[in-house]
Image 1: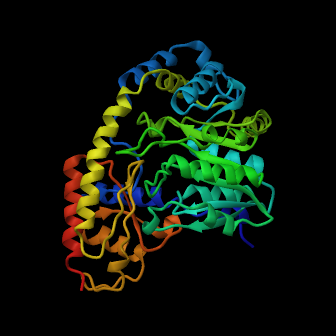
Image 2: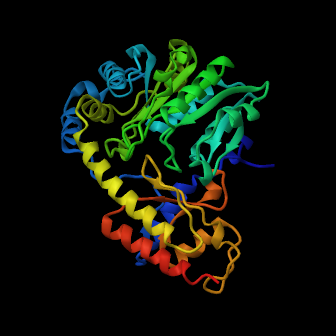
Length: 399
């Protein structure tokens, strides 16, 4: 008999964190591994945010429990920030502050799903979504896309996957891992389709400020007002403000959903760290000058990454329009001999790349679409170029 409950034993390890941990271990052992695995900005948190946290440490009120749903002033600020940035109007009572975006993802599904309820998820998808849906008792139904459509799902694909058990659709734009950004007209069509069928829409908007070129972020919650009673917006400070370690996210939704999710959080973690909440308050209340500087750097790296990847034999990479990931197909390299090995899967190829080129990548198996890699271009320009040159040199040996 297993000592571990089946629902917990069935959780897959986070592939992105596992790759990052292995890369760090190899670097600690003296190997010059370049980490393209974790989605973490390589910039420090802006100074005014750090200073706000330092001041909060000295405030006695932050030494005590605070409301499980979040500091009232932060909930107000998140509502104001959401209206400013995406045009979606919500009251503070519709906001729940969570321990990072991951807790928001889990609590959203735990609150609206009953066992057996189906959720449409566009693949490739972020590795945490399947586990959150599974833990909530839901059933994930994949809607698979590829590079030929720039990883964008159509209404026709979604409708083909819908059944009588379909309860929700997970909508992510900009996307992790593909960098896909849905055009406004496609957001509108998908939102109206979901509303017509009475589906919940869980929309993850954590990369809202990271779009490039002509791409425009469009919140499905704003574009389709008739979704208001069945839409849950997920977001956080991690990516926009280089605050991955501060662990502050949020849910925005109908008052009954937020009340139920707050009750769940009150029994699981209670309030988010008050110091981190004070930092988040400074972040969302301030301007976006810091993210504008980061976005300019990411855009430059994005263009370098795509150009160099598409010059490699056996690799094909559409240009990502958002986030900070490239998601190239490496199907042209599978089954070919490389350094005495013949990798048959992208997972085997990623392992070979780590050992031979000392570049850490996450294989497509982790995101529901084998035959691809995810590269996070959040390295310095020098390390980015070095890593891509290593990849190109290795792949040129494939026979």
